[in-house]
Image 1 (tube, protein in one colour):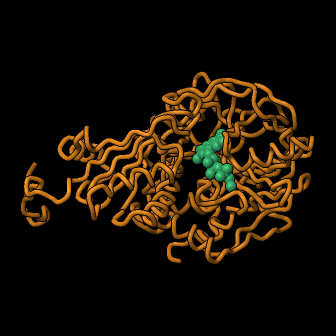
Image 2: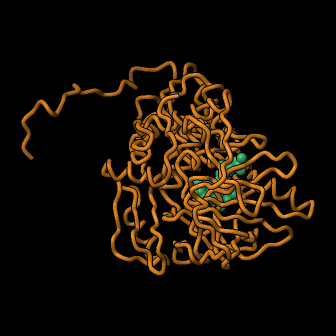
Image 3: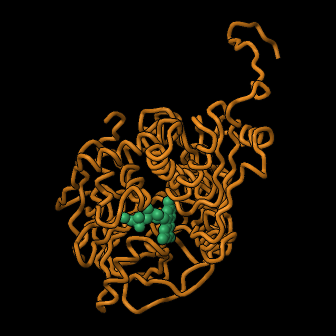
Length: 454
Ligand SMILES: Cc1cc2nc3c(=O)[nH]c(=O)nc-3n(C[C@H](O)[C@H](O)[C@H](O)COP(=O)(O)O)c2cc1C
Ligand SMILES: [Mn+2]
């Protein structure tokens, strides 16, 4: 496979981005409570942001590595449009020819061991004004299936509620929740590690949707495929689950059975607050970190749209192209939060094929609420172009698909706790194509050939 990342850690990623002119350093001291996220929001979508001085703490904080597809393309040495295909190739390569992670002792993430765990010694920021506390927003949780031992990797928001205590969210359908519920039924805690500051191979493997990485498979194999070699895991000190060896921080702990405590509010990816409620509780047993760790945070917004979007696009593209011919590309738009609106670009071969693509896309990615299908002449990254296709090629009475009462995404306030209708818009040119749909074309001139004064 081309475009493999190799064994890049977060520090190496940041150097690569800085050398490419894609890193902004904030040299002023910032408060991790509200100020850091406020500044990050002002800079959202541009260069990666490195906060050198965080008030009350000696470790720097970084954000924004994934909020701009050009940043990621720099890391993968590719064009931004290729990214979903690189991710989808990694999934195929993992399914056909899996490389397994290896476990090592004396991992970089274990250079320093905190004897008494104290989460308050970490620069965990509090983001939105009404958030319930400091949050780990992009850390990778590893666990093992209590019955089969299969490892799982996923990202879960975790709120700091004490020096050795977190509360966390596990949505319906998450593999971690499945593991936990089976452990809890036996009256046992579920051991986990939480790795902060992982490289993109581990991050994207962890957020690969269940349709790409089913329950009985360890998705860290996707990280190995993205790296082009085995991922190294650290042997933990207090739990039977490994951590990510080249992470910045690793928190070892257990999700306690029969216990729920307050978690939230949290300013979520939807642009709304997730409610405060009693949720799952993690007891921390040990914290290890590097000598010079960098804390990785993410403000829910473009960075999540891209995280979910890229892996979702890769997975939808693979599934839909197997079922419907003519699919060229898929984009999970930022206006749709990377979760809720898929734009599918295709050349339907026969009338009605775009509707088949709509149904296949919904089935491929459950959180979706809206699917819009356009022809290949439409730029799927440009909202105006999509609106133009809708305004000129879409006949509401013929080209709409409404699927009532489906399962969608609990976080979306447009659903009733995840239960909602879905709508598909076929904005492709009706077949057989009439000349009234011939798009106006001008001569394609090269501006560099002209002397232009503005
Ligand atoms: C930044 C970010 C934060 C996330 N937070 C949560 C969360 O708090 N709870 C949750 O259930 N899923 C969360 N997710 C989604 C899961 O990590 C994701 O769906 C993952 O693929 C689930 O893995 P699984 O298929 O092994 O269950 C988050 C995803 C991202 C990208
Ligand atoms: Mn999984």
